[in-house]
Image (cartoon, rainbow, N blue to C red):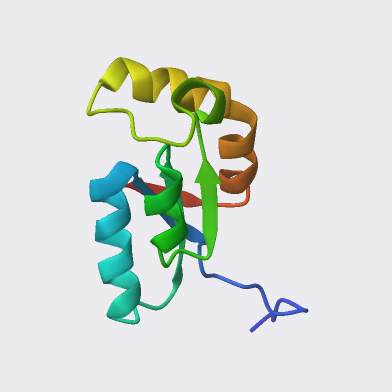
Length: 102
C-alpha cells in the first residue's frame, strides 16, 4: 500500500468564537472544562469583559464607536462595531478550517 510522505495532518483547525458577553461566557466555560482540539476567540465591544475572558485570542471591536463600553444589546451597534474592525476579525479567523460562533 502506498504511503504519503510526509504524513498528512488530518485534523481540521477549529475555532470557537464567543461574541459579546454571553458568547464570551460560553467560551470561558468551555475553556474551564479543558475542551481540547479547538481554539477560542473572544470578540466584544466591552473592554472590561474582554479583559476577563479566558480565550487565547481576543478582538476588541468598536473602540471608536462604543469607547470600550458594551453595545447595550443593540444589534445595530454590534454590527457597526464589527464592521469597524472587519479586518482584525478576518485576520484572526483566516487560519481556521471551521468556525463556530456563540
